[in-house]
Amino acid sequence: MKNIKSSILDDILKELGSFVVAFSGGVDSSYLLHRSFKVRKSSIMAVTIRTPYIPSNEISEAVEFAGMLGIRHKILDLSFSDAIRHNPIERCYLCKKSLFSELVTFARENNFSYVIDGSNADDEGDFRPGMKALNEMGIRSPLLEAGLTKKEIRELSRNEGLEIWDKPAMACLLTRIPYDTEITDGTLRMIEQAEQMMLDKGYPGVRVRVHGDLARIECLPGYMEKIIHSPDREYIISHLKKSGFRYVSLDLEGYRTGSSNPEINDKSGMNS
Image (cartoon, rainbow, N blue to C red; front, side):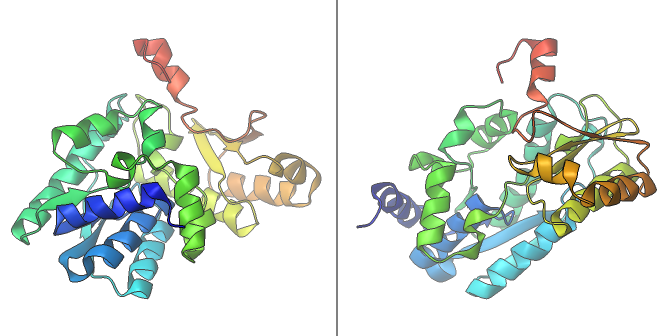
């Protein structure tokens, strides 16, 4: 029996007509792109924005996924905006404004009626200043409008045979750096290489957060003891130190989304 929410999603996509899918390559936007192509076929296009703070493997995986489905796919290159160079608290808002302005312009110039993104129902419950920017710009979020949660999207993706159904959540590399900190291309590459190394060693979903010359590793449940007791520990330490970190720590709380949000709460009184 078809999921009621997925039927609502398909109805929304039919109503929208022609549109650009803001495609990051993550689980949410991949499922959205998959359903969009099923429903609208040639009247849609996937567009991925490449910036210095998006891991290169995310771009590669987005290209592979769109190509596998035979969907038209465009990559837009965007330079590092000076407005977010020092990682301000309003970074997500400013970044979304910049990125989606490009998408809106692209859609308009290529005669698409809408730009849609992969925000889901869970995104309403956390500190998400980027959502404000999307609302201001008239970006539609069909997964959220249909009430689909991340868990449901993963289940639907698995049921439809999409290999990305269990792909770990990914966020831009700026989230690994404390607010109000100047960001350099060197720091971004250090983080990207460190997380790719952890993935290659069999630790998906790891975050390597930077505090000066200290790398704070957040890992998923079950990985902590493995890292501590495995020969991987010495390799990880050696690799991170060679890449430029002086100290390497393992966060005992493990990976959690929005782990920088308490810092925001301290400064602005906002809820995480």
